[in-house]
Image (tube, rainbow, N blue to C red):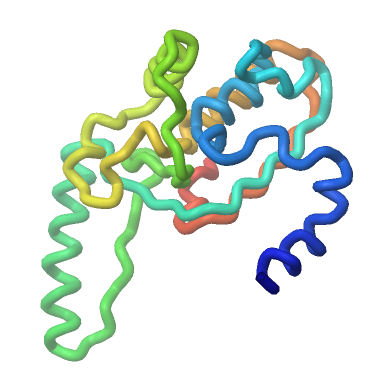
Length: 183
């Protein structure tokens, strides 16, 4: 009970202003894409208006997976080397992950609905991601729950193309491996 009271007290301003625009099952990549790109509809009534500055903060879990066969082989070779190093009490070297050969993503709790609108948006989103290798990796095998760095870059490029001169965008990525989202 005290946790609920404490959370409500800390979120008082947000609650006074009407609460979150999207919560629960709406916390998914499809909603994020629709909101960023201004795809207003009955399902997504609150979106980023054209010509406005954007502040986006993503606080979540994140990861990456190899997007190419070469990157997959390199990751496996590193895994074998690291296991030998650790067994011989040498320091275990961290993997070197090439941002051009991996897909980087944050986890979102839901995948979005299955309506025709959401399915079309999901297909558009996944078209910019090399997600075919994702199912090979346990824990990294749910691309419909992930918001990929390549999707974020594509969305920001579309925002800039839609609204010249470009509005300002501040993006704070706070999840594991979010550095891979930077180019």
